[in-house]
Image (cartoon, one colour):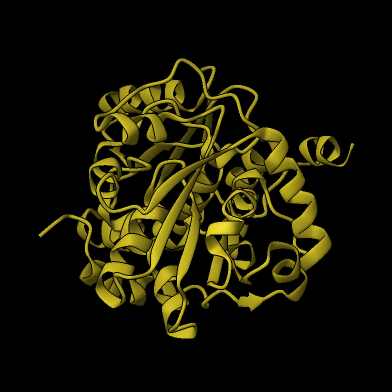
Length: 318
């Protein structure tokens, strides 16, 4: 059995729902009218921490606190993953250290500190911060929580896909942002178990296309940079476990530009009055590209998070 599986998602529900409720799945008529198909949005922006990652953090830390009492954890993030670990660690009394790149979203940084995490700023991007966190783990003895290669994180976030199928049994296509890969892999695991005919599209930024290039080549490809305003998509190096799982299972990986995501943030606000961060708006940007292919289908866009900082929001609105 793969390390990523439907049973793991089912088992994650108890840890996830101990501290949060299922997120809304809403049909938005204005979006449906604009796109030309029946469009639903999975509002992960309504979760604690404002993003889907909290599900993985709750599931991982619950198991870790029970199996390794007293030991701390360390990880790297652009924001949402770190917030999930910080909040879950506070709930379970686990010491938590998070490494972020220099110039990271200041509001996400403050949210992590507010939940009791020790924050370290290091490196030019997420991947340099991740390497530094791994080095600190060896020095401090904390457990390094890989943002992508931890099955418990993937199973936790997979609970949102389970909610989609429970509420919209005849869903035909789901579009998911793709950064580290946990959301896509959790969705693929659930779809394979419940209805393998459902299409699962993943979305990456044109400026951070490492997994898209890897998918095309069939083996991991690193990129030199990942300069995108979509924090959740800004990775240069594919994680091994998610890539191996999704490469032969995902329907298609779609690349979208910075301008397409910027316009999608605006459209999401105009049509749903929900504020999406760049990664959260990426599925809408991809849906516009895929509108002819998706015509006549029931489609769910995963609004993965709403944690856009004020400086970026000013740029989006400018």
